[in-house]
Image (cartoon, rainbow, N blue to C red; front, side, top):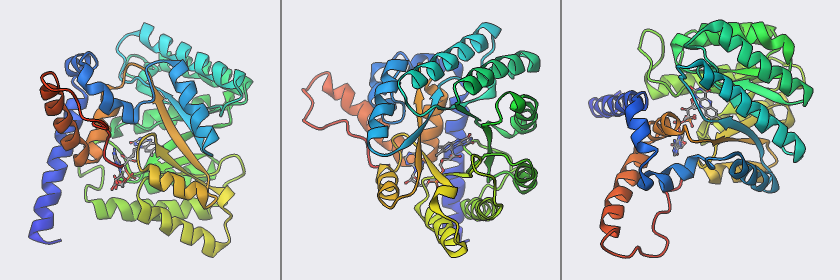
Length: 338
Ligand code: FDA
């Protein structure tokens, strides 16, 4: 590492840490969701505020050859009513997906289901969604939040898995503990989604250098590919990193592992070029489709992942300010390519 790249890395980490900190500021979230200027930027990542808007987006993605997983946005709830309402929304979403013959696949966060309030409440709300999903033949994935939730998330998934064997978890390559977690999950035949990790974690818990995280991702990805996980529990590689995608494909090809033994997952609105090229090449790509009004923390993590997103947002805010005085030019407001 040179002095210059070290300084750049520190700057980027500080920037990310700042945005992650802001993502937890509830009052800012309430303000942001009320300001109209944020909407065009949010629309790049979040397909809409309502279930109907989400269904339109999923239908469009299906026509284009993508699988989908739906995230009913919400996290860190502090009232039991909110956790119960979140379970209601997931049930309604699953029902609507089944009625329309769409991909029955959802992703949820445990702090949205009441984990910060009471573990028993959380278990009850998750169990309700798991049972509803099992009746509809649907897949449920529990997203992974920051490292303080890792044990609770894996424990709770193990406790409720019997209600829906077709359910899975997420492992973050950045966490130092992840190789051990992956080994245990492989032994359990669990469907694992591997991601780099979206939270700002301490160095004692997680790798913080990009190169170390990328190396860990590839190591864990190769381990999952070679584990021979049973059908129905195929590993999901959640990344927009084209180099990692190609490395994993090369390993799979070299080992004679067919493309239908694994899938790639990407966020709505990010690296659409890569998503499309993988589908054209015959790989399975699942798009993560978030909808709802509670988009603020999700959106802030997307900003933290790519500094150019913030620059774009600030430019748009300035333009919006000027636009109150001047009419907009055609095609203004298009986001930069992801
Ligand atoms: P990296 O950040 O290196 O990005 C590679 C390239 O992708 C960038 O150069 C850029 O071109 C593009 N890119 C990435 N993010 C972008 C953005 N926000 N805007 C525009 N371009 C962007 N995390 C977590 O902690 N728990 C979880 O449960 C999940 N779940 C999850 C599901 C799915 C389907 C995905 C794709 C990701 C997650 N994540 C997650 C997020 C994940 O941990 C990680 O923060 C992001 O995917 C960014 O990391 P990449 O692997 O894309 O690499």
